[in-house]
Each structure stands twice: as C-alpha cells, then as structure tokens.
Amino acid sequence: MNVSIRDRAVYETLNPTDLAAYLRSANWTAGDNRPGHSSTWRTTFDGQMVELMVPLNRQYKDYVDRMAETVPLIAAVEKRSELEVLGDIQTASSDVVRVRYRYASAHDGSIPLDRGEALVENTRELFLAGACAAVAKRPYFGNFKAQQARDYVQTLRLGQSERGSYVITVLSPVPPQLNPKQVDLFGADVEQPYERLAVTQMSKALVALRAAADEAMTSFQTDGFDRAVQDGVSANLCSALVGIGGPSAQPNDELVVSFTWARSRPADAGIAREIVFPGDRFPVISEAARLYRRTAPAEETEIRGVIVALKADHAHGPLVGPVTVRDILSGRPRKVQINLDEPSHRLAWEAYESRAEVTCRGILTRSGTNLAIQTPRDFAIVSDE
Amino acid sequence: MTEEQQKEQFSIAYVRAVAAAARVNIYRMDVDADSIDIGFSVKSVAGRPQSPKLDAQLKCVTELAGNDTMFRYVLKAKNYNELVGDHYTPKILVVVLVPPSPADWLIQSPDCLSLHRCGYWTSLQSWPPSDNTASVTIDLPRTQIFSPAALRTLLPVGGAI
Image (cartoon, rainbow over all chains, first blue to last red):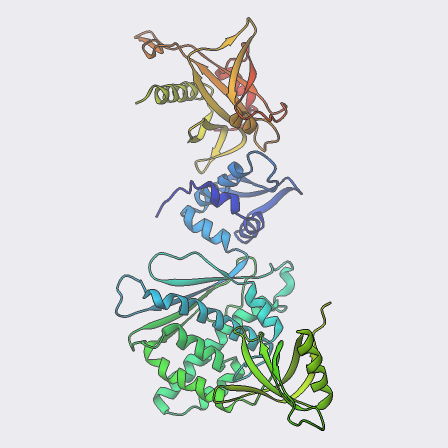
C-alpha cells in the first residue's frame, strides 16, 4: 500500500537516533556531523548521489518539516512504502517480538474482548520467563525473580497493532553494536547485551518447548520437558503460553511467536525467527507447567511489608509467636505468616508499633489459603533512608 | 469555490509559473487555514528535492498599503513567528498582489498571457520574535519582486535538474 504520511505528530516523535541506526544498517554513509545541529547521510540512486539531512535541534523552526522529508526520501530511494520504512525506523533499535494467536473460529483476525487483557499480561510473563532463564535455568521461577529480569521487563514497549490479524507487538530496546569486530567467524555476537540475551533465550526456550511437547504427545513421556529446562523452559514459560490461548483454546487454534532483530545489532543466523504452537499442544504444555512446579526445588523468596498482626505464644517466657506481614513484593498484596525467634520477634514489635515496613527471606509455603515463610532469615526493619 | 480559495489557487499558479520559468522544482504544498507553505529546489533525485532548497510562505491580497519604496503588510502573529528565527532551510514570505476583481487577474491573447499584478518577497529570519497575539506589521520592499531571476538568486545556481 502506497501511503503518504502527512501526520506531523509522527515526525515530531521520530527519534533521530533510531533514524541514524536505520540509515547505518541500510548502508547509507555518514557525512558531515554537526553535533547539536544535524547529521548528513549519503547514498547513490541510479548513479546519482543522494543526500539526506537528519535534524537534531528541535529549537529550529522547521525541525519537523525537515524530519518529514526523511521518510519519503528513503522510501523513494529504496522503492518501498513510506509506512514500511517508518515502521523499520521506529524499530531500528529494538528487537521486535510478535505474538499472534489465531482463533480458528474467527476469520477476520479479531479476538474476544475479554481475551485482550490476558493476551497482554501473559505476553509480559513470557518475556519475564525468558529473561529469568537468561540469568539462571530453573524449572520454576517463584516469587523471587532476578532483579535484572524484572528491570528488563520494565523497558519493554507495546508496539502499534498491525493489519492482517490480531498481533501483540513488543519492542525490546537493545544497545547498538558499535564495534563490528564483536562477531565471531559465523557472524554471531560475542558480547551480547542482556537485552538481546533475554530475547534469544526466549526463542531457544520456545523451540525446546515445542519439541518437548511434540515428543510428549507421541511418546507419552515427559523426559523431553526435563531436558528442556537446560534450554530455558520453565513452568512460567509454559503457563504464559497456555494463558495466551485461554481456557477455551481449540485444537485448530494457533499461537505464533516471531522475532525480528534490531537493525542496529544483527543477530546470530542460527536463532529461530518463528515458533508455532498448534492449539492441541496446550494441554500437554499445561501439564508440563504443573509438573515443573511440583518437582521444582523449594525456592527462597523475599517478602516486604507492614506487620498487620502479631502475638506472643505465651504470656510469660520467650517472646515468640506468629507474625503476619502484608507482603507487597508479589504484585498483589497478600498476608504471610512468619514464626520468628525472640530477637526477631522483639524487632517485629518495634516495627508494628511504628508501622515500619519489614523484610524477611525464607521458603514460602501454602497450606490451604494460608501462606507462611519457613526457615526465615534476615528479618529486618526497612530503613527510611 | 470561495474568494479566498480563488486567491490561493491563483497565487499558487503564479508561483508555479515563476518556478517553471526559472527551471526550479516545487515540492510539498501544505495548505492550512492560515497559509500555504511551499518549497523550491534546483535538484531532485528519486523525485525528492535535494539541497539547496528554499521554503516559502505564500499569501495573496488585493491591496497593500505603503509608500514609494515599501509596502506595509499585516501578518498574523502565528505566521510571523514561523518565519523568524533559526531554520535549517531558508524561509521567505511571498505576497502576491492581485486586482480586486478576479476578472482582471489573467489577461490572455494569442500573443500574450499576463498574470496581474505582482508578487513580492522578503526574509524575516533576522527579525526578533514577537509577543503580539494578533498580528505584526512587516516591511515588503517594492524592489524585491518574486521573479524567475530573483528565485534563481535566492537558490544558488549550480544544481543539475
């Protein structure tokens, strides 16, 4: 579709850094660079030299007018649509992951409204699972997830919807490759930033999960899932996929996760670009998630919050007894009970009276609806500083 | 077509004629409620303008006050502030003066095509920003006629078309 982009708002928000990353990856040659003013790029078209100026100073009255000239010129030189070029520029510095769930019953690419929220939330969980596996491989990531993974997920952005079918597009910003010598003989990045590792780990894990699911459906064995942990598969990853499909997933439904790497940082050619999960794999993947959780070693977790209840077991003698903390670290506030030793219990009284927050580590267990920390350690009052 | 639209179209036609006679390309015709913005370039590649370029804001009026050497033109404050200050591409104001009656705008015979009356240009880039909210009165030198020769002077000669 040949569309001329006339919306000034598009060019007001077009990032010169993304534009430069795109031009560099498209083999335009950098010319004059005037910091704080503009950069000039050159290429050839039909034997003629073409020059493109990227404005850098928004104080200039015609900054947006000049920025609005860049996309049409690039589109004309590359003989592509302005929309395609604009999309590539806006994602030049990001890995783009597209999660598409196709309902066999829907022919127009739409999805039920009440599935929309679940689609976005579970896509986030998918990324978090990949990011956690990039730090350490485990069958299940409980409450205590690596801070690096949690910080990374905060940087992700939801891209614009695309024509054709309902697709969640996630942009994962990645630092540009500044040193071309950072690749080995096969063109693979030898010094990958964590942002790239997290996404490639998710790709590898999805490939391994698909293989394990296929094996389990034919052999009725779960060994493949055990081996897949070393490739980054976890209960979290499995649950996220199943959550995207929803409780009414049909065998003819299809979930497709595809990857487009940032132009500013080429990726290893051996990493899968697209992984497909037919709807009939979801039951066995759901079962894998349950098995992972059941067999995973108990994981230490951290809780934090104010003390909402505490009591002493005995009227006389050591000051010990259950302390209930309203934990806020898990996302949704929840009450967690801890049995502390006497010194920690005295600290708990002090925190309770001053309404101060406390932290504690230990193994989180569930008995019915009650949550408790076993083998607590490092109980402390959170400092205001 | 309203009278304002008529004036807009005629001034665009005038500027196109001047550009064509000067062998200069016209690009990007943006029209909003207050002005017409156009651009000129000597060279284009892949159908897109290349440097050197010149931007212009176009106006069309039926009368201009002033004296023997200078017209005085009342410009909307918004348009004035768009023309002053730093620009990547130089931007001028072109005011096309036409007769009050559209019937007198174009005279044609087998020997001659005559567009009435004349366009004038000025640059406000060195003028200071204005705090006025309504309008700013500017000088429009009578000697600065927007002609093919003037356009070629404003755009450095040397770019191949």
